Image 1 (cartoon, rainbow, N blue to C red):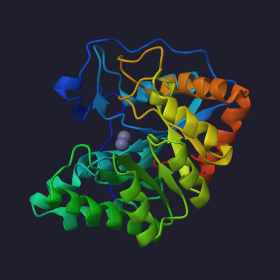
Image 2: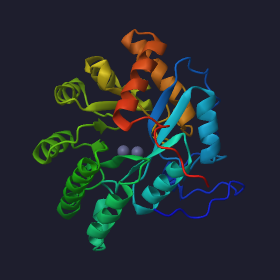
Image 3: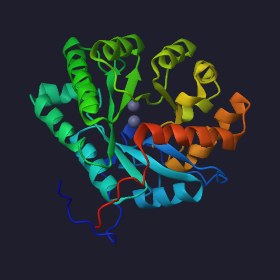
Image 4: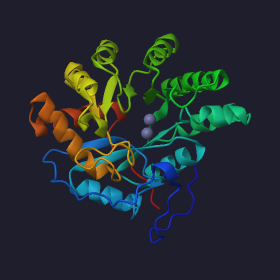
Length: 308
Ligand SMILES: [Zn+2]
Ligand SMILES: [Zn+2]
């Protein structure tokens, strides 16, 4: 693997802007009270600039450290962001990477005739030591409605499952309006040993199916939303040993800051809401989730970073 030149003095660089329709001119929320027992944000997109005053990923990680969020899994959604995620994780001790073509990107590559070549590059990136998950992959029937598009999603999802198994790393699943089809595919192809439903969006029934299969449920800020009763029922149903927490930043900002930009340093709000709902101590839940996270992705410090 070869890394491009890195200049720490360089001004913040963002690969992406949020979609104009989703952009907010609001500012990032203040830092919450620090956690006593630290956790990780196991799913974030720090390459996306957002809000009135976007925050560079180094500062994002500093803010996270300041409130007890020890590290993040930076997630790619196409070739460009997957490469960026792998490259940054290779030199940043607080970052591990996940690489994949998002289910909404797979049809775009397929239409251009480049899906197989793109999957081959994802397979190469997945072998890097600080790339610890293949994701986010899965099925999204909300935004992809054509049959050809869904066919590409299936082909891509199945290939990603194989890549995760070949490399012995975790799988991060994006499942939107496709619970039954995701489960069927996992069972048909054979799920990797460590499989995570990122931004868990199911109910108690899906939580029970995850529990039976030993699949992890990663809860995002939407578990704090007032109307998210189904997510909180799922949270109650899931074994504590399968719980994870994430931001999916810059999306899904937890209460009380819904509508403002999201960031890993806001994980404490989600964790505290989860603990309150479960009637458990925040530090006990944090310790459990941290240990679950390290079982899924390995330890952040296991593989030393490359000098820049
Ligand atoms: Zn997703
Ligand atoms: Zn995501």
